[in-house]
Image 1: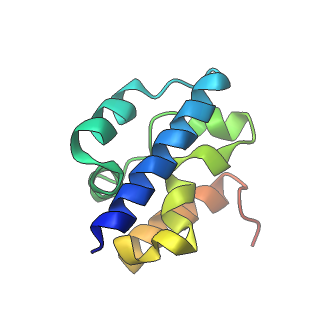
Image 2: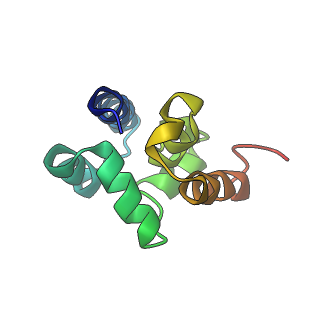
Length: 102
């Protein structure tokens, strides 16, 4: 996997968390893990544990799931960082919360 792409994912996730902070959605645990391990590694670990990211429900309530880790995982430009199963897991969580309508 590309180190540049992993760095870009981490930067995009950090920007999303910064914007979420401005909306009152604080993701302290996720932010600490991203700073320590990187965004893609954090995403993979959450997905392995079948968990949603910190703030997912609050972002859903605000109609801002675009700021979630799950939305970033499904972004095409980051597709090579994740397995099909990981992307599908995020896609399902987003669909279940009406981010995508199928």
